[in-house]
Image (tube, rainbow, N blue to C red; front, side):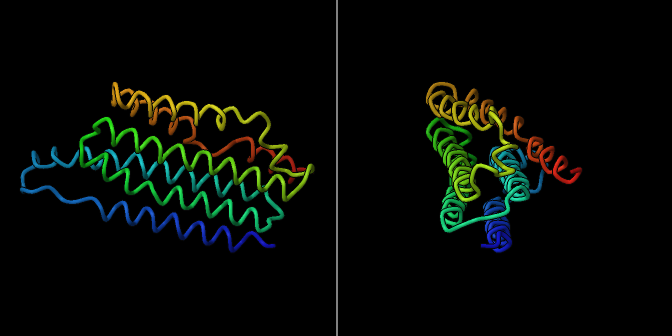
Length: 195
């Protein structure tokens, strides 16, 4: 199977998710600059979620540059990832509307954890479809970032009920860890081109 349609579909779904999120932003009531203060929680929740979706789009793009072969398992795993990402607008809106209260921050953490786990499933499906000689397998190596992120999300979910600001700090930390596209894959592709 060709991967082009999967990539195009994924791009479209992520674009729609971002569009839904931005449509949830409401202008403040009042024409004074001070009125912006009331919408800052929604804006910051949107900003963090936008960064996360951009991270997934970037890394998804890089990952599929290293992929030559996909199968039905990869398609379904990718659909699972897209489903998990489609939950982000709901939790983003709830968290922003409630000014980062504990339960919405915990649910937001769950909606960050789910795509992280789904991304791991997509990688596993690709590795199974491509076999032992996969460029992706060579590029992933130990995948420390991929292993530590779910742990930090779970810790954030637990902390959300005690100190929501600390949970948010962990979510921001994970975003910072992933902000740059996965260099392992870029290096692997560069090495292949050099050969």
